[in-house]
Structures are given as structure tokens and as C-alpha cells.
Image 1 (cartoon, rainbow, N blue to C red):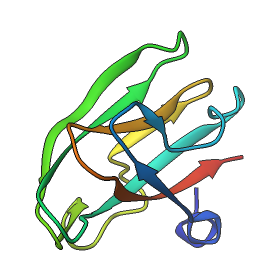
Image 2: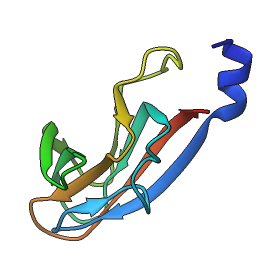
Image 3: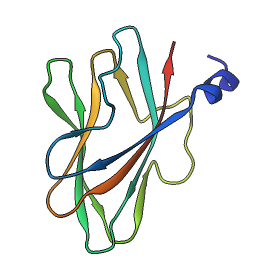
Image 4: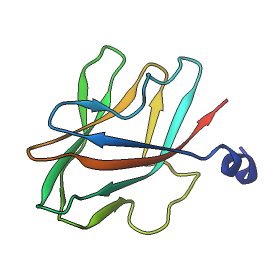
Length: 120
């Protein structure tokens, strides 16, 4: 796909992640699509370090480790990947029926922003 077309499809989704499995997208990726996640930004709170685990939610509803044990110090933020990102090289591809989820080990919530685009 042409980079110009991909740039027009770039979207973002922000979600607050707590101590239970929290899906990033309100519904799973539609069966006919692929969702390309190109960047994840995690923002810490003002009080203490949090540990975030990211999961790929499979079609059967089970959770598969994607990136475990991400330490986010207060009030810092983490970028995955650090710095710039490549729209043609996603960090994870979500197939139809899947989703992305996060859960922190303890404490208050963290803000998670996902930058992505769908093929359609």
C-alpha cells in the first residue's frame, strides 16, 4: 500500500489501563481487516512506578503475552518503539477477531495510547 494512503488511515486510541485485563479497542478487529499497531505510548501517574503487561487477545478470548513487565516511573512515559515509528513496519498486527489488552500489577491506572491503521 502507498505510504500516502497509509498516512491518511492513521488513527489513535487512548485507554486507561487498570489492575484487570482492559481491552484497548471497544470491539475486536472486524474479521475482514488487519490492524497494524505502529506505536504505543504509556504515560505514568504522579505517584509511583507501575508495571504494565500488554497482551494480544486471541479470537478464542484467551490472553497471550505480547510485552510483559514494562516499568513506567512517575511521572515519565514510555514509547514502543522509542522515538519515531515506521508505518510500514508495525510492532504487532491484529487479525480479525483479535484485540490488544493491558493490565497493571498494582496501583492506579496508566494511560495507554495506541497509534494504528487498518487495511480496508
